[in-house]
Every structure is written in structure tokens, then in C-alpha cells.
Image 1: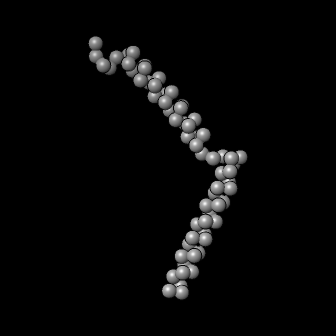
Image 2: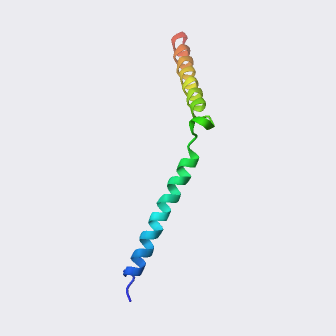
Image 3: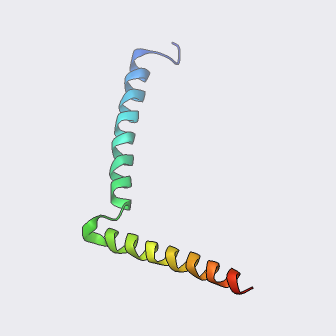
Length: 63
């Protein structure tokens, strides 16, 4: 009996399908949605980026 047979192929296919489904659910749970503060986190990151570059640019002009 070889390693590649119908039974092992079906088991492998099932494991891949279930694994993909579990990975998708886990990934969706990791991303913050709009109700969990996703918008606030994005806005805070944007403001931080603007302040960081503004401060860096402002510091290089006087130097």
C-alpha cells in the first residue's frame, strides 16, 4: 500500500479545508473592527505619523 491513495487524499483535502476555515476565522478575530476601535486606532496612527514627520522636518530646517 502506497502513501498516495484515495483515503489519504480525502483526509488531506479535508484537513486543508478545515485549516483554511480556522485560519480565516482567526484572522478575522485579530483585525479590529469599527466597533472595537479600528477607526480610532487608524486615526491615532495617522496623527502620530503626521507629527513624527512634521517634527523631523522642522528639526532639520533649523540645523
